Image (cartoon, rainbow, N blue to C red; front, top):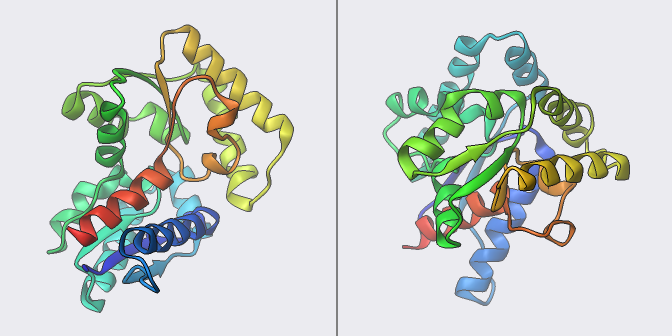
Length: 230
C-alpha cells in the first residue's frame, strides 16, 4: 500500500471526511483491521482564507509548496490537496516536488464520465466557479460542458461556504438556497451537479436532488485509495 500525503485544514471540517472515507474504503477493500497509510499536513485556514480573499495567490502558492515539500520529506508516495480551490496552484506545486499530485478535478471528471453525464453544473467557491483552473480543466481535458450559476447566485453560494460550512454551521435555509440554485442549473440542462467545494457535501445530499450529485470530497478520497492500492 502506498502512503497518501494530505494537505488539509481547508477547512478541517472537510478534512475529517477525507480521513473517514480513506480509512473506511481501505477497510472495505482489504478487510480486517486494515486502514489507510497517510501523512497529514494541516494548515491554519485563517491564513489561507486571508490570502485567497486578498488575492495574494503567489504567497498562497508558496505556502502550499512548503506543505507539499514537508509531506514529501515525511515519506508520502503521492499528494492529495484536500480542497478544490487550492488546486488553482496545483501545477506550480507539482513542479516543486517529485511525487505526483492526484488532481481533484480529474478524479471527479472520471466519475462524471462513468455515468455518461456530459453537461454538469458546478458549485463551489467564487474562485472555483469563475476561474479557468477548474472549469477550464473539466472542459479542455475531459470534454465536459460546465454550467455555473448566475453572478448573484455565485456570491450567495460563496458566502455560505465561508461564513457557514467552513465553520461547521449547517442551516436548513442555506440548504434550500443551494437546492434552488441546483434547480436553476437543471433547467439550463445540467445532467449532474459537481459539489466543487469539499464542504458542500455537509449541506446537500443525493437524497435532496433528482439528478446525480458528485461529491468531490468522497470522489477524491476514494480515488486516493484506488491509487494507493494499485
